[in-house]
Length: 192
Image (cartoon, rainbow, N blue to C red; front, side, top):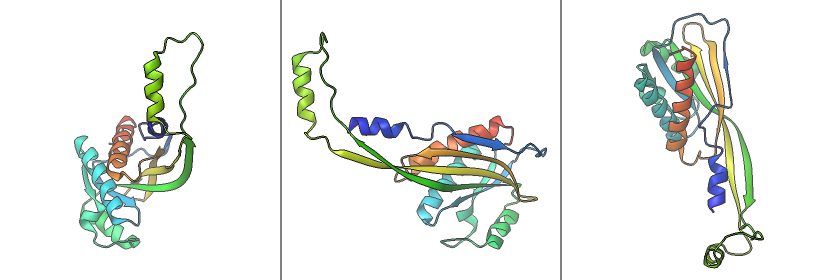
């Protein structure tokens, strides 16, 4: 089980896999952002939007979660989103969406003893008591997420990034991690 946790932890979104910034964007930094999570599950949508709003606010950006100004579940019509942008006077629109899912897995087994190792016999015995033979396979999903920032005045894409997480079922932790790295990257790109 420990190996599964370590393997899965390597997929946490502690760094962006890729990012792109428009070479043609010469506007000022965004200081009023509407955050929209593209997900049919209203709870996941709310968690991601709120995490980004909190992280943006910590950077001094006025941010509003779409769910706070647009009522409704499922896919929102374009005019609802544009109306929300106008209502909150946003100059930027940040969208988070899942763009892929990959199933991964494996099995855990204890390492064999090495000749001339200084391992104590009781440690070997004790480790054998914690793992049941044969090793049980484990599986988990790796989710690829895309975060993009759009200029609200002309709906032009200004910045985008991809990241991966294994913890989508722990939406609050995944959202907080992603918001942290994405907002820091936006700040580094001088877009906030």
